[in-house]
Image 1 (cartoon, protein in one colour):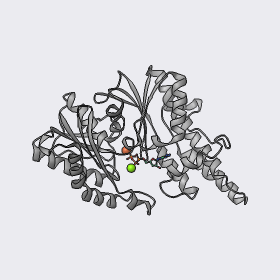
Image 2: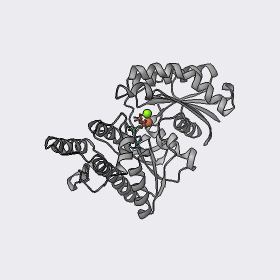
Image 3: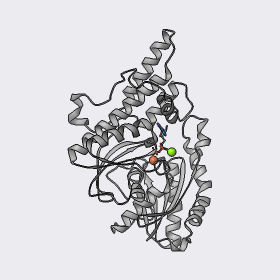
Image 4: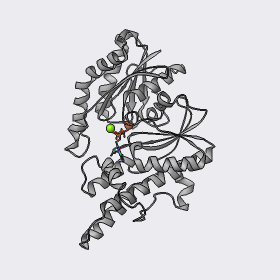
Length: 344
Ligand code: ATP
Ligand code: MG
Ligand code: FE
């Protein structure tokens, strides 16, 4: 069956066509350029951009896939989590298509979509996979027995997401928004052992309750204090070393906890998704530690890690194939949709 997926949770308008586990075409438009000068996503601007991009992006996806709207068997759309205005625009388009075409509608979870998309790239998941979803808005560790009916959230960030922490540290180092890619680049020139920044929630006392949770706000504060102290003393800031030491702390915690979870649950495949998986310090350390632990590492190409329609079509297609009941046509969007809900 042919599934058309629509993603609008943040600043990307994504539309893709998937048949089973084959991606036919993925079209994406982004309003990031319009937000950059504000130093953050402005929901109203994003909503308007989705409205303008929706029909052209759907057209582009259909043309790219060389299919007619009439051939579509089901519509999938992000139901949450995300920004409520943008989500509403995607849902409205999806409902209209579902009603107009007389095909079922599946409202799906964006975060789980970030893991599901890997099946389009690297093939079906084995019986169990661990998924680390890291982006500007999320940092979650999921144990996946089945991408539709068996997702367990083992942990998530208690405060900032990994990408968010990078962007905040970028700001305090005076880098342009979003700071993540700039820190990554600087970090490659610095010494990751120059400064020992804290590893959040890794102390023995955190093992019982927060073994697989993350916390990056203490780290961000530690970087801010370190920079402040040097600045007050009139010293120069070794920006590359700060970036490298900070990035090393984030990558260390993410990979250590994820691999501990794989060991604990006997899982030998790790999928990393979400826009932050572009981060080279995370990629490098994950590759090394997975190899040591005998874990297969799967990371989709970057364009499937940032927000896109293929991830939503993939999860919709998986839901359809398992005979999950479609969503109601009044499908409510949920800005803080919990990870226990794969579909609505
Ligand atoms: P979501 O709604 O899923 O959270 P998002 O738009 O917030 O989506 P993405 O677009 O998936 O997040 O990812 C963007 C985030 O990843 C930003 O915080 C950005 O700074 C960060 N990022 C992107 N590339 C890198 C990199 N190479 N190193 C570090 N951070 C990066
Ligand atoms: Mg984005
Ligand atoms: Fe996302």
